[in-house]
Image (cartoon, rainbow, N blue to C red; front, side, top):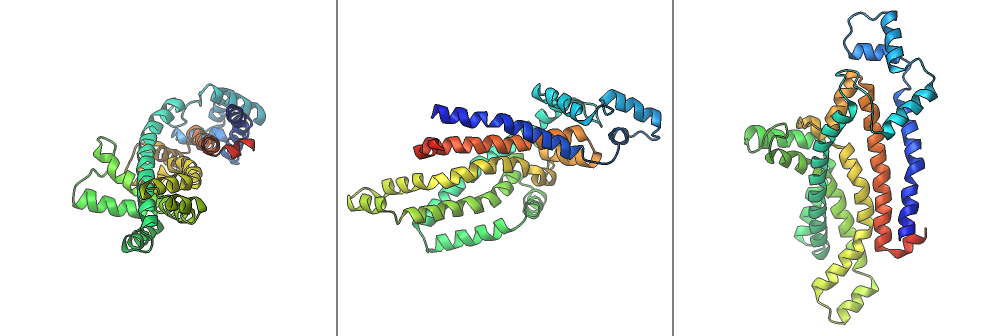
Length: 309
């Protein structure tokens, strides 16, 4: 197991260089002069060639492309992502502050999604075909088919504006977590609870279940074994959904004015703040890679056969 973990972690090294290079290339693929972008982002009323030359010299835009990438990569390895074009604040500190709010929201959503998916999926598998199973699948189908911004707008209008149960925006208190967390959890619960239900229904027809029941094993213990064997597929999908939740907070954070990473990225796009956009793309891409490897490690820990691959 130790060799498998080391082998998978070493895979991150070439992945990091590939992801960082692609992020740098895509962000710098614009045909517009980067110095002009900086000056426009800073609100300079009249852009002259002298100002463009000064910016090119200050930011190193007049250097060769590959040399600029190596300089940016060296700074990124030290967690130094430069200064914002708009506010001139340190990008690392800005990203760190916004990421803490996004991580709180994504973490709460992950816990809620996991609990509700397992509970609803297990109950629907046990009571297959009954009214609870049909009603739950119908409700989840309708809710998960609705876009997040629509559900968020409806929930904000109903529970925050009309009923005044929760705040409409911000992250000032614990009550501020409830609406964005519930809205984000709805779509993921609709996916994962069906995954658990279908996997459990398949495992219920396996020979070991019949053997347990013929030996008089209590039904609760049988259900625990079925659930444990049904978690493999969900763990793989769920581990990949965590970075998707972090990236998917863009819509929810803008609906509920949540001061997180997604809202920061949208503001950076509109203000053309390239360092923040570049750091956001790199961070999200690395999250996908890291959680993909963690998923492999968890599955290898559960199923020793996977360690040979």
